[in-house]
Amino acid sequence: MLRFTCTILCAFALSLCVSCVSVHAGETDWIEEFNREYEGSAKALMANLQDMEMKTKETQFNEDGTSYSQLSHYFSNGQSVRLDVQRISPDSPAETLNIVWVVTPEGRFIIHRKEGVKEYVVDSIGSVDRVSEESTESVMAQMYSNNALPFSPFTIGQDTILDYTQLPGFRFNSAEVISGDSPKQLIKLSYQLAVEDPDDKNKKRLTGGWLVFCPDEEWALHEAYFIPFLEERPDVGILFEINYSDKTVGKTPIPSAIREWAYVKGEKKTLRREVEALEIMARPSPTSVFKLSEFNLSDSMLQPATRSQGWLWFLIIGNVLLIICVIILARFAKKKKSE
Image 1: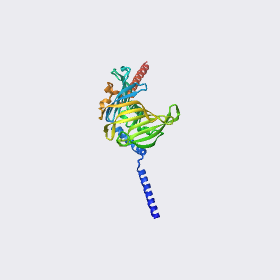
Image 2: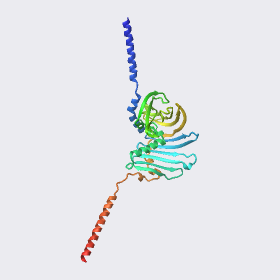
Image 3: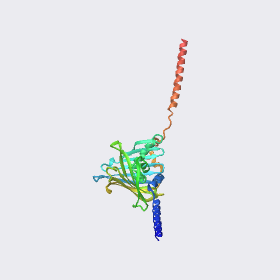
Image 4: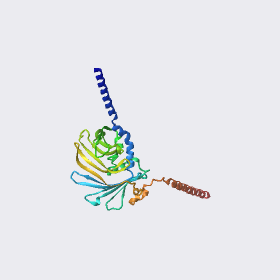
């Protein structure tokens, strides 16, 4: 009887162990999932959000209670991107500035004009054969930072999430499934990143935070928390919350708002910035809006440089001068001989 009882207890214990192993084996390694899937998802996010227009309003809140606003209009058609920003001056309407960034397959340019002035001033321009890839990426980074909303599902500040997570020294520490406003599953990935200390380039400063994604939405970003001084002030950071509209392109949701909070000891302390979509148009923008002529400037400024034919003219002129010299010398020699 005792042997039978022991056998039953052993069998029961074994079944519990098998059950526990099965549950553990069935758990998803979300860090591994992200590393495996995100590059393809990021390309899908960028592609799905290319064909649209979006008008937004951004408000920045100062500590003294004042605020600053700017209006933006984003255009894209899958090949070209344009961002118009109107920086509104609360003190002097005449100081309101209109800036335009454009990147096309032909090249890129940045222009601006003050409110009330018709003519645009060219700040930077270059055809595709005259500018480096780094220069074009710099213009795109300026777009990210001046109107984050259209790019928010796949960017952090001036970096794409793909570039950010591939920086040297970046690593994820942990992952957890969380419940949020979205009915879909959200995954919170905590990370840390060693960066160059601005006060001492020979030292590294540890930063960190977390990123919240929705795997069912091509890993679209829903929340980002950044701690500038992870070791010195781990309770102080900046939280970015991204809200999405009901409109989607494929599995990709279209963002509708961003709110940036100053965080102290895990509590939302101060709303620093808010970006809201005023109008979303899920349609490709016409090619004409990406041309210089749209701003009464010459499209020829963006044409590729043609190979100079100056060498041919130098060759022709040189031969003519040589012939003239030969004729003069021959006449001089003939005249001297007759004397």
